[in-house]
Amino acid sequence: MSPKEAKKIIKKEKLAVNWFNKHNLRPFEMVINKNKDGRYQVYGTGERANIWGIAATFENEEEALDNLISRARL
Image 1: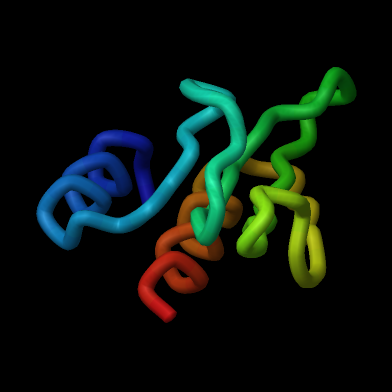
Image 2: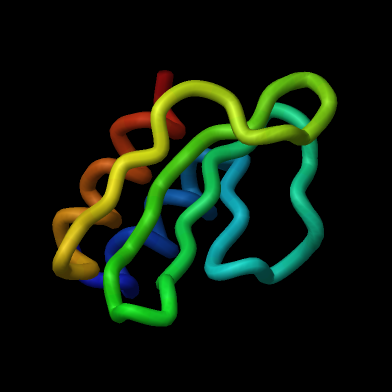
């Protein structure tokens, strides 16, 4: 999925997503970041805005965004 498509879904469905560190971590949101090595990381936050669950790492943005949206919808 492209960034444009992902942003459209996030807005339409009012998904709790932190888009590339747009803001400090908040409770119960999905996060996408790009590491220094160029890989993308997707993870969720818990009730205290700490990393919760498994952080998935992806080589390309499209796969990372697919995962982000899927997890945010849960």
